[in-house]
Length: 146
Image (cartoon, rainbow, N blue to C red; front, top):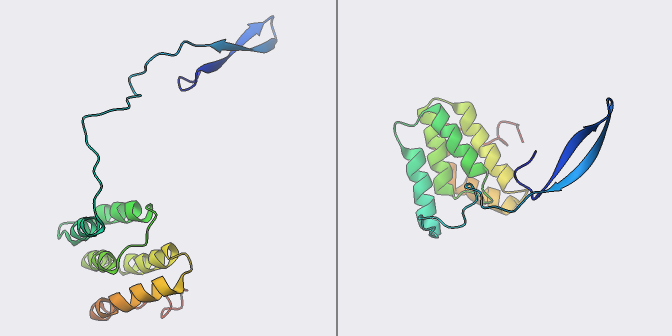
C-alpha cells in the first residue's frame, strides 16, 4: 500500500478464488518526511558565482574520473549551456586525466545542449579554440563525428 496518497486500495479475499477492490480512506496525518520548512536558507547566486564554482570544481588538480563524470552529469542535467570558461575547465580536466575521448564527448554534449542553435555552438567553439589548439584536440566536426 502506498503511504503517499490519502486513498489506498486494499485487496480483500472473498471466497477461495475471487478478489474485489475496496477503497479505504486513511486519516491525514503529518508524516516525518514531509517538512515544508527547514533551517537551511536557500539563496540565489549570481551567474558569475555559479560559473566560478564549476570552474573551481573542474580545475581541482586531484579530480578523478568518477568526480569528473559526476560533475559533467550534474551540469548536463541543468537547463543551460555552459559558459566557455566552464567548457575549458572541463576539457582541461579530461586532458589531465588523459581521457581524450571524454574531452570530445564534452564538446558533443555542448553541441547537444545548444539544441541545434549554430550561433551558440559556434560562439563557444570560437572562444575555446585556443585551448583546443593548445591541447591538440579537434572538434567533433573536424573528426567527422557530427
